[in-house]
Length: 126
Length: 169
Image (cartoon, rainbow over all chains, first blue to last red; front, side, top):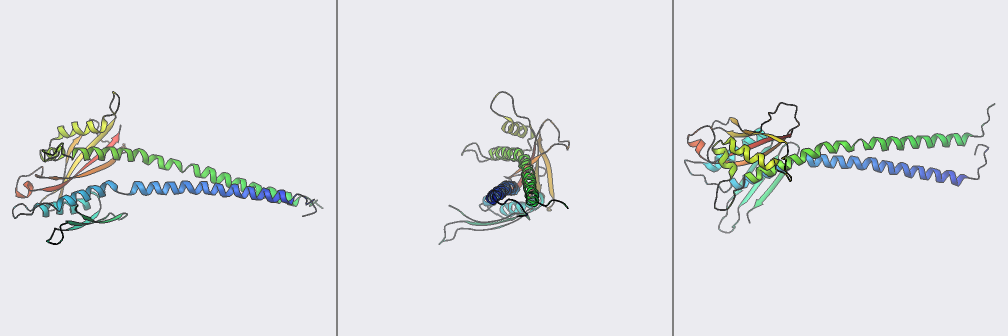
């Protein structure tokens, strides 16, 4: 060791180990905030209220009647598709299946995509 | 000739200095990230308040009433009733003085030719001038009459989108 007294090599080694562990802990601390930030951003970007709203109105529209003069269901479902695209910048598509003799449930298939978040669901009546 | 006795001490000193500097840099650098999250928190709270208020207005008061207050207000274009009810819902809080949340609400609907129209349903006393930091909440309402016409298409059921901008004064 460069002409020095090398009696205390253990102390030097321990010094390095302690400094490197401090360094490592500092990196952990640094990364943890980044993880917190990305999670928080993902939460605030997720269009929870938009999806809930459109899901709710789609399910309501599956039960509307569609008589010749008032084509209520066609109109409402058209409105949902076009207004979603126009105001929420989201492509929304859906279809429903009414109960039949061997299957007493109504099924509604919902697709939502706003370019960042895609949400798909098959809803079944209780 | 320089005395080379202290070389190891020099190297150790430099290594220790580098480690200290790097650790200090990383720690100081990471604390600045905390402020990023803070700016979104008040936005999210305002958004929850607003969308809860719209949900409450879009719920019929009891099972014998089949129209929700919001449905009636949009069908009759009743800005005054909307303003009063929405203002009470978002601004009431515990204690005597109300909160200072301002809003502007629009109803967007589709005409028969496919074009999209929009009317202002209600707004609070302070106008939106552009400097505010507003959040948007929206709710779908199925109405039985569109606001600005009276032919067969308009008197059928339609889905309209109610959007409200909320900000704190």
